[in-house]
Length: 334
Image (cartoon, rainbow, N blue to C red):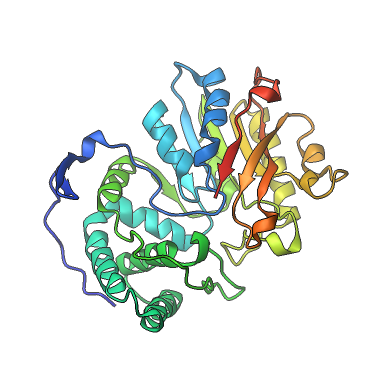
């Protein structure tokens, strides 16, 4: 366990690679790697949001925040009057809270992790020993919140494919990745992310609990654990509480409820028709709403010959969404 000491406030003019950069001039980006991150979906999601909310103030609620790709982009472009993020994964939410409230001490620990890990380059056995010792420490969950957040980020940056997966005992079990000197402490981005999170409400609860924060003009963006396309492609175990078909149906009912209350929402998920053309699971659940299929490039499969373009779903209750699929961009997901 680290003894956390209060460091002096980091100057707004911050040195990065020998250059002084104002943290106020740089937009934050996700500080975590995340399977299924939505960075490449932004152009189309932007079209949906702007078709309804252009020039209008709104509350933004993200019940499954993940890496926050949409969060930071929406905050930067649309500047909502209130932002609420949530996730059932308490380890993930602890990271957001620490980045928001104690980023300077977090940076101190991450600097040390990065320095120690990079010194082991060229010594694979010692590198593995270091990684698995940090994984074991993380799984004990008896460190202070700042150290626990630093362990989360370290594992995220050094594990295989940036996956977050736990077993039924809530133990992180992703093996070490094959990275040479990965960027573990992205100091400038963490500082900017902390500023962006300053007024954000951060929750650690079931997705339905976010409804109480909606008012007047509100947009929900749902990025739940994707329904696996096959038994071997299940990467959604980021919580020991499995998000199965029952939970997917409960989410669909929740979308119907918030639609009846006049709130707007967008939802992304996998398309089961990639595997079975007769699988109408989501088409049936969301038959009363707008369902779009977008060609996406998937790189997460461990077998190279099974990576390539597939369909992903974007579903919304916002009308006037363009229907010409030829205009939709080909996107890439991690």
